Image (cartoon, rainbow, N blue to C red; front, top):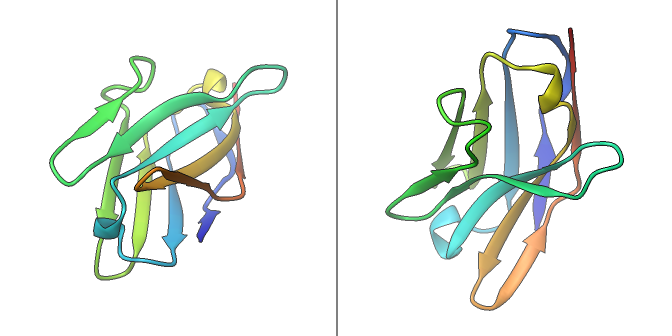
Length: 112
């Protein structure tokens, strides 16, 4: 259902754009979003997108931007001014009705 890509190694202050390819148009999902999991920590919310709104974790507000392209069935996460604490595996998630779907993760590593 979901295929995430775009992770990599970047220096602090740099940028990356994550992509998530969906098997359906993004408008067919109630909500789509990004989560991340740092080593030894629980998976946490990063950002979400609905038809009418976006929402961000406080730790990424002003630095990350979530967007979608319905024509391409794609979800994106533009990450700017990256910090070492942004390091982790990033997952995309989509909810359709009462069912949630997770993509495989993509590793983001930010060096100081």
